[in-house]
Length: 412
Image (cartoon, rainbow, N blue to C red; front, side, top):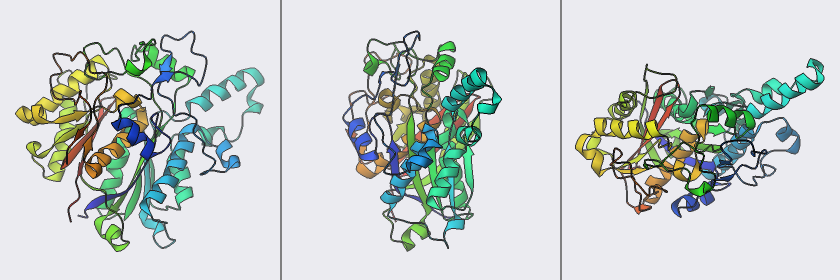
């Protein structure tokens, strides 16, 4: 089996239009949540979201090409350009067949569906653009990144709700570990802050309605949490076999050592109350890495700020880690960036690697009144300087789909 390492990172988030800005604002405890600006939300119960702000894709994508992309694809292609710049690598023709792209997208081009459905009703089928389908389909993020980067290996979109980005990293990792490819561009992209998207989650009572204090609305593990905040953006990692990375003199940021996936086999939207499905995925990641639970320092929690998810994740952590659960440093990035759906695991995977590379664990914001049933250490006091050895990044989604990535501080 090949060892797999991370040699590049990139992100576009509600905290910044590049990784450096996003990470700086995350550590500073800033919030990316504010009023909805993409449409008139006057009549909506939830009027707040975590937007990417004033992003200009023109340095990365031509105007003509950008017009034929939805936002999630623009984010993915722009982020991929940043990623390859960060890695210091350009894929050669000889290497191209052994470089894959796996990008998770939960919902895809929801805005295009809304726009073109209205056009169909107003003007008839003859006015639908031939670009509607290729703009809307979820796998176009991976497809366009493959074209842009010249990567001719496996070109895959994982669509597993809120675990999409994590599963994408996991399958890229697996392909490299098994020797199928030498490198993979992995992560997640999403942009669904639209009337239909917000209406659907509002109908499920899944979103926070703390409209009067947007920056305080996402509050994972807090007793007064009332739902998640919709976010958008993209997070990508470049994974390589250790041999390939060393051969090109790459800067190695961390090692990927375990991937776990499971199914709750329980309910369409609710996790099992004992967190057993989540625990299965965490244990699978640890088992693949050959790591004992007490060796893990840090958890990048799914931490959505919903009543059931945060409780179930806490229970799952106690199941897997036992008494050591109380010694874990647990961080919930969604308290600042909202829930990026299919992109969540990608961005949180990027932040997990930054935790290892920079020796800083982000805090969890807005945890002012801890839920007595969520009694672990969620880093509520703010970021911590700590050289963690292992970070476990969790993602759990509708349909009972679970994914966990275990990252390790690199040591040759």
